[in-house]
Length: 235
Image (cartoon, rainbow, N blue to C red; front, side, top):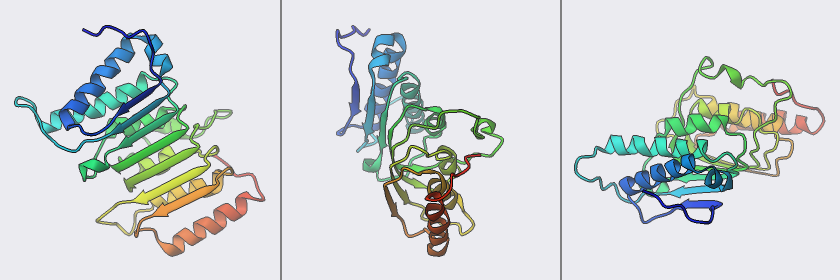
């Protein structure tokens, strides 16, 4: 059983050295604590998770089971921290491209995050029917994103999560795909939305050999040049 500390913490960090099992267990336990303590949940402002450097799994547990538990735990953390404004999920130490579908689906609906960093992930695939409410609702406040750094494989999640970047000031985008599909336009759609809507953007950092130079040039020209003289549509 937990005995609650007198103080409510605003900054939550899970840093190496850690392993998959310990990280999943800690994240799940903390999400349960926040669910039982509104005072703790209200206090959280930043969540930073970096790991893991080993994959040691105790006997009786399967790797996929623990991996899925971590995805569910991170999702629960986001759901139980209504005022989080900075969220980092950096799994570079795994030296693998990870897949956290529940976490990524939850992030689409979190409206409070100003600072978002995700590395390294396979972005999920969604259809238009999966998220019909993503069409902009009149008078709806845009997501709070001001600084976003994505190091991911291309996927339909990208243009979905960046569908309304009006508050964005800094955008870093790295494409990690090893087996690139020439017909994939998700990265182009993402950058187009940023170019057309992020009128406050100050810094754009692109990294990845898969960006098509001609398409990228057209996006930047038709987007950033136009936003200086017209008000973009967010429909």
